[in-house]
Image (cartoon, rainbow, N blue to C red; front, side, top):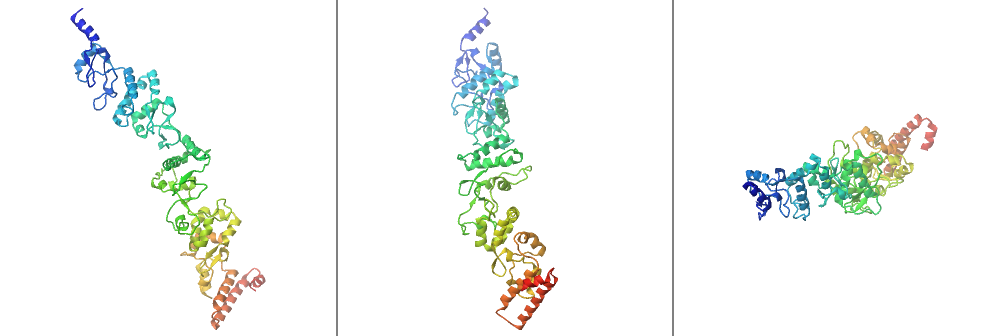
Length: 490
């Protein structure tokens, strides 16, 4: 045996090579390995803590020394060693595990993910299968899972955040932002949830009897997801009432309990039904949290957040005109007519475009509304059917005989007759408010004139009476049946 051969044989048996650890223990050369460059972090330290006993060779050796030691049995780093290091790291609690620690920087995770992706890049199927059994996927609840323990999903569906309370294992949001980690999660078996699946889970929550507790934060997540996926919802999706938090932090079903969007509109619930309005029960308003962090409207949405909340969820932007069963006027409507008569006509106009069809289609409800007394310019409150539109041409006719202020003109105003008729058309078409200079109008002028003239009977008054009777007679003469018209006058 030569001297060289003797030295080589002795190196194989003796502990002559130092480890990387603090104590720099001596180990036999074939028991140690040199990690490749991709196994180091950005500070030059190995990604994973050393095993016990140690396998990392000391970092003090120069490149030339390492090359010589390799010729004497220093190991090349095999992926089997990576797996041993990984399992050793995972065996420690999160405070000591580099992978599991919440303090580990993102660059480390990027490098570790690149290392663990090698089995897929090289087609090592057995190693791939083993990696899928390890808890390498961080969840948004702080735990770590493997897909062998149950399905794991990415935290977004079509880039829309998935609510966290649906019973799904969702990848931690911060971890999923790292492209390299996201690639690893995909290979480990993390799934993409469909928007239909998530919508179904959300709606199932609200359809259950004895619905479990839902926090306002999760409620917001639910509604935002439903809003952003509204346009792509399946046609077969059932209509389920969504519950929403009110201003008292009470969760209420929006289709069963009126929940108003709070604003300062003069004809809104805050002004007409609020604490100082005299309404027997305080209205419920949608919790302001829903609008403090409202989602942005995407171009493809075609509907704003607040309009979607009204159209789909069922919150109210305007006071209810009809009762819940739509067979009568609502208590709110009757309250406004009785306690805020000066605002009732404005309220009616405010809600008519959205709710007036319910009156138009029901003669019973229309009759109930016609009977409500509304303020007129003569200071009285009269049913709609006894009132006149305050058209300037009607006022001018009235002024020929008496003050227009004594007639039952509705207390509304508009700059032009065309505008008044177009804006308030439903008053005449549906509620019977008169707007024509017909026999009834002329007889009502006579009645108002006589009531006002009783206190001052003069020659001038008598002359006006004669003129007014002549005006009435002129209508009778032009009538289709003059005698019937005169009989009506009598």
